[in-house]
Length: 388
Image (cartoon, one colour):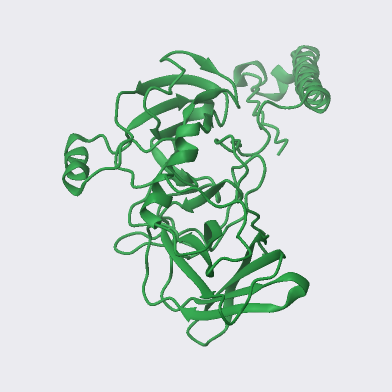
């Protein structure tokens, strides 16, 4: 599937408190008698003062030169690498961001809806369970020491009763790894695949080292990595560098070593078939996409999957055939907010609209408007298949 998206050096003050004892220069006569001595004391103090200033300034220059030549260990805020061995927005996707709205309700850092109440990290999902079973590595986002590890939690699809039991047990994270970094930072990796963890407590890891694989353990409804950052016990949003629930549309500085753009929409899978596919099998990774559509197929259907459908979003599915002729167009408006993976489709029978050999392209455009009707976000995604 091909998806395309538009869219100081500061010197410390040195305070010198130097004085000549009053009894030594208490009056004019004493001053005359001790003139030379007082003069000598003052001169020695002046020389001492200048020497200290020179040494202090010299040390500062040496430090600056060292920094220019060798670089500082931390320049500005710390940064973290992307923690999954995948191609973001191609075979893995940012599904949920940190909740930045305090109290009731929720909002991501851009005031969008791609989060849920109290969410403390960022969720990076793979397409389906087949990809999970194939194995997608989770990577250390920064050098540090492994503090804690938990393994042995199932990746199976769970019932509501099983989810409730997980919540009561306090094991929502499922299989997880906690890594300690310098300066009070920690990174947390949750929902890891059972028996995939390859690190142990007290083990040193470098940025990019494999920790485990993406899974669906713990309180998880789809295969993904829950990645969280903590600084001295407070959860931090890696996209803004701000503490959780600070407020949306506030930006300090991204903590990603390579900047990651905000994605208002997440179309994570799509395809063609001769009929509407079984979406349950598709989600479980039990569905096989066809390599092509037969020329004599009785119908052709295009489908796509997305997270966080938002009520009022306007969708257009536009399918073209060889030479760009229009095969089908379907427009609709999403009727309710849905966080979980949702599937949509459009197509037609081929009795009146015969298929032709060649490439067919489906283009999906999703537009979101504000209360005044102005478009505030829009993305276009596309997929292709051959008919033969």
